[in-house]
Amino acid sequence: MSEKEGMWVSMKKIGYILGSILIVAILFVSARISIAASSLENIPQNPYVQQYFKEKTENVSLQENATSETLVDPQLEEKTSIATLTEYYNEDIKVANIIKKYCQDTKLIEETTSLIKNDKINVMHAIQKIYPSVNDLNEKKILVAYLERYARDSKDNVSISFLNKLIQPIKSTNTKKEEDLLKQNKESVNANSAITASSYAGSYSGGAAADWAYNHYNTYSTDYPAFNNPNGSYSDCTNFVSQAMHVGGGMLMQGNWYCYKKNSTYPSPINADQLNYSWSVSDPSPWISVGQFAEFWTPKANVSYYSHDDYVTRHETIYNLPIYRGDSVIFYSGIANWITYPSHAMIISGYDTTNKDFLLSGHSNNRRNYPLLSAIANYSEIEFISY
Image (tube, rainbow, N blue to C red):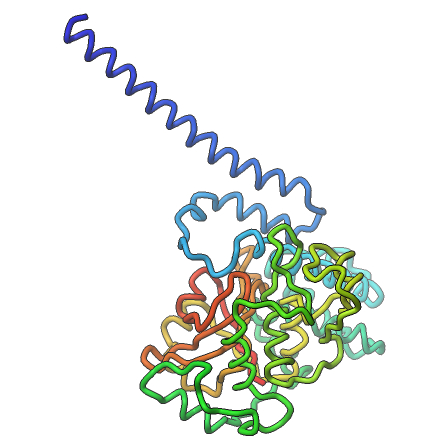
């Protein structure tokens, strides 16, 4: 074989190799899209969940370039997102049924579950009009919850003002002097701080809850369900925060925020049947559901919201607000370019006094004193719930 022929053969081999690599790459991307499309076909006809999968499919390339160290296991967070968006849709259907009693506008009823901002605003304005005529307290609660889900994100001042009148948000400026001293230390503070439960007023010790979370970030109590099975339907993030508040901080179980053990058959339940067989929780449960947790505690605490960019830019100022160890942090994801929904929960377990940032502990993935500035990377906004 001549040298020229040999070079030709080598070039053909290289071409075959490059072609094979290209085919594999195309098949890989196609598989990712097919999986997402398949998931889309298999889910209920819920426009919120459909939109989630649609955006996920469209952003396959962006997901490949996302930060390699994800705060939450992607599969678990997907399950959490689907569960929360399903709760949103089911509750919005209830709102549509209530509106139907007082208004015969078919278009308005359809707009109740629309993803378009102006449609949601129209519905919230209608709620304001019919609200005085609604006598059933449970129906009123459902209508208020609708406003809580969408008024803030819509930035509609009429809806926000009406919501604030209904829930009378807490504006307490009470501070915890011991925690303020810790926040001003020159070094990061963790569970080795000397604050004790007796330093706090009331039934909840934020410092003790923070210490519990710091010390148990990678363990699972047998007194509560452990959602640590990757094939399960649940994430353990909210369950962990609830335990830190109750077991660590002494927060009393109340309302629907409770969890009791029935038996030891399913210590790590992977579905609702196993959960209900071995554990007693409300349905839906603010003890284990991040969406229900936020809805349950928001009216009972001081709450503040910050977009991703706002916190990253102003974290030094926010750090000096009355936000302390033992307070909860809810992370919000988004769909339709304006609707946000809670998809992860953690608890403040320490302070980074150098960078003026909060340190968080939580489950799924297990984290201890993880910087909020890092944790917020892939989320639209955060909510501080201060007790």
